[in-house]
Image 1 (tube, rainbow over the protein chains, first blue to last red):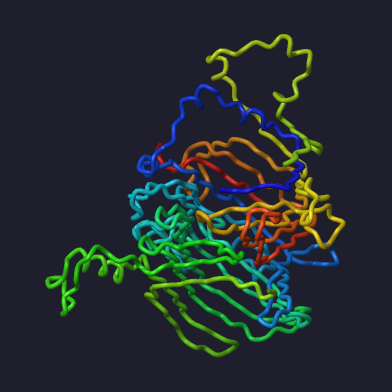
Image 2: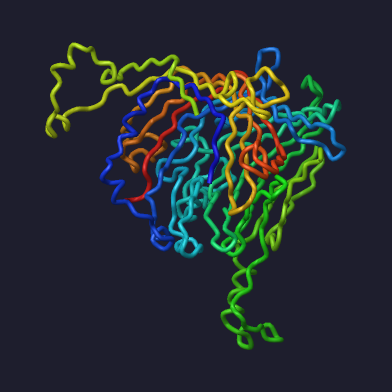
Length: 352
Length: 184
């Protein structure tokens, strides 16, 4: 349900009229689809890719450029202002955003897509599911290693290709953000975050409606791979910089919500935003044997819990090939198999 | 909602829309065969601006006003309810102007290039040529959560989560290619 008011829009005179010519006869014959019928819908979907894409924006007050995020408050009630000095999406070898070039995002044969999926195919029974997805992962026999900037076909499961050779500029952008944060009158140094040759293949957002709770629910999968993620802080004039935190071969596979525990979005009665991953629902009645084996347990209940605890799709992973701070190496780090059993985030208005 | 159709538009190549009056009298429908022989040329080239509540919206009450009173909001408000009887997610105080020159629109046949993908794809796409520079003129919006849809409703309470302000030239180069996926 939406509410819209107070909107004045001035647009170029564009021939929209043709879009409004809907035949009256067809409206008279239209009927609502039931939930079950709607669940059978599997739209062909809309694919899109960006060819030779380049994006850059930042703050340069002298030249009238402003990009800032405000309205946040620190816990002691001071205003927090986040000024984005530079945000870019560029082709490869951008040298931390100083040399911007263009890049393709998505592939014609595996594009970004907007689709309505049949929930029965993706483990969400009898639902029509809206999906916004990045290029999908592919079979390792035809895919490309997600990290290597020199990967060839058959080296991994990512679809996006690194730059070079016949792939030209490739489909892996350099992405960077430089910002500074002011808390009250304390303005921090500039914080720079740069990711080289980034890949988000296999990421998606799925949205559908929950009948019992009567609300919008979703599932988010965020994959982010980069051979080099760097973070450093510089003085505001950019001349003096501190040590660079360098994470090589950075892999993040974040699963927020799953088929059993979707992500719930809500706003409570006092106007606070709530994000929740509920605990898994109880299966049909049945017991697990004292020895924990399937043979001594109710098979359906045992399978239900076994799937929940073993399905890698439900779990989040973070791997860093090597962590370097300045000239010190800290080696590799892995946090694998994180399972969110219950999560509830609620905003609070500190000004009240 | 008010839409004022008052701004710049150049539609090069869109001759169909701007035919001289004299030819209208002689127009006759084309049959299927004649239509099949027609290929579109050039596409559409758009230059213009989109302004949203640049000088305030049409409502003036305790909450909304024109943009001269800093204590009131003059931007548009969009409220979405994501749960039955729940609160509202709000895009509030949405205002500003986007200007661009040279947004192009055409149908393009792709059968080669793209690192070998073109030949495999071999089909038509809708190509939206991005305008290289989009000028944001004081574009602002707030993301908020609210207890009621309208600020004038009884029991209105709102938490502004964050607000965003963008001004200046944003570099946006490239082509957005849109096409159907799958085999309908």
